[in-house]
Amino acid sequence: MSALETSATTSPRASADRRVEVKGLSKSFQLAKTTIEAVRDVTFDVRRGEFVALLGPSGSGKSTVLNMIASLIRPTAGEILIDGKRVVSGRATPNVGYVFQRDTLFPWRTVADNIGYGLELSGVSARERKERIAECVARAGLRGFENAYPSALSGGMRQRAALMRTLIVEPQILLMDEPFGALDTHTKIDMHEVLLRIWEREQQTVLFVTHDLGEALTLADRIILFSARPGRIKDMFAVDFARARDAVKVRETPRYAELFQHIWHSLGEEFIKGRSA
Amino acid sequence: MRRYSTLGTIGWQVLICAIVLSVWQWGYDLRARLPWLVPDLLDPYFISKPSMIFDNFLIQSCLKSKLGVFNGWFNGEFAKCLTRNENNLWAATAITLKNTFFGFITGVVSGFVAGLILGRSDRLSAIFQPFITAVNSIPRIALAPIIVLAFGIGDMSKIVTSWIVVVFLVFFNTFEGARSIDEGFTNAARLLGASEWQITRTVVIPSTMAWVFASLTPAISFALIGVIVGEFIGAERGIGRLIIESEARGEASGMMIAVVVLMLVGVVLSAIIWRLQAYLLRWQRQRSAE
Image: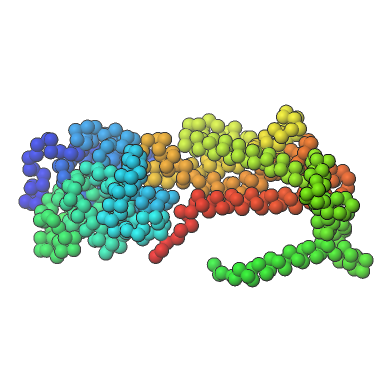
């Protein structure tokens, strides 16, 4: 056990400080006649305002865990508490925002109408909606594209619009499922900048699923490493770079290289296991 | 796709029309000299001639009297002619259009609603599946005589015939559309706090629209077919009735007028649908700016 891990796992915390509590979470799927165990006995907490990355190879169940927290999938065993309240699957938890891997912007709505969708649902007046949409459009750097349909945008622009559609309702907990997985490296780092600036300002509690170690290091306070199927927590790592971080410069520090190497081997083992499974 | 100049395309279209009309008009005259070239079908007794059709059109539409004099708009000849013949071309077209419209609207609305409900409910679709398959395998037109018997020779039987051919078409398309909705969209809406009804209104209906519209152009032709068949079987007015009457008199030009009018009506209705679709589904047509 290295000093890196202990600092993340043993620091005592008041229970009021816990935003998300995941207890003994398991999930099995029935596929044809075989049972696939996707997640096995996963337990962790997330503090208020913490940025946690769930890192692991594909098939390690990290997205399944996220989707259970989001109430999209019903767990086979275990429970999830958000602000002390149990998550009921199929019912959206207030204050929780979700950003999908694939942008799910509605193709029949313009960029502005997509971003304002959540406000429309809760009956916010057209005037207030317009103001808040304009603000979000500006923050996402989408000025001039308000009336374009998503099909006219590039991948990065679409993902920014999708991010704003989630953020406009000001969720305090943000669940992100490989949101930048489909973007090229440069666009991805741009998106990291966008996300870091938003997070620094609003201090949401973030759960960020990724298989990209560099991304996890750039963004997170803590990395939870998942093993290959069945997904279990293999390790946890504190990422102790100073805030506010610069998504490009942070990668050039010796500490980044040190952490990267340290986690890389552990992650690599799981990638190999995942391949042979 | 290669782009061709609009002018060239129109040129070809005009040429094709000219050839078809010329063969129709004068083709049979060649028979005296080249009997092996001209089939019997070109006999004006069967298919009339463009000139005769146009002439007869002017008479039937009360623009011209039977003696070949143009009816005046202001001396009341036109109006008198209209009242003399209850099923004049204008009245017949109006009545057929009216019944087509009602059959179409009721068919589209009921097919859409039923398709949406069954498409969103696994349970209901499982229950109704065999009945729908059974009823759908009936050629709907075969029901027309029964419908006329049940609803009489008035407008109602035409609307019902028209409805029954339209409703299934729209139903199946809506049903398929509602089944194939991307779960990502419904999940995104749900996680943003949408209720089931809000999901239906803001996700299910818009994403089903493309499927619904794909059925509307055939639906409008089907609606017209339903009305005409209903009128063939029993009616006092309408274009179908005009065709039956002309056939009884052995008057090809009368039938052809009705056919041409139906064609124009069909084209106009399809164009309306197309414009509506281009507007409502405008999000589909904007392509990437990259």
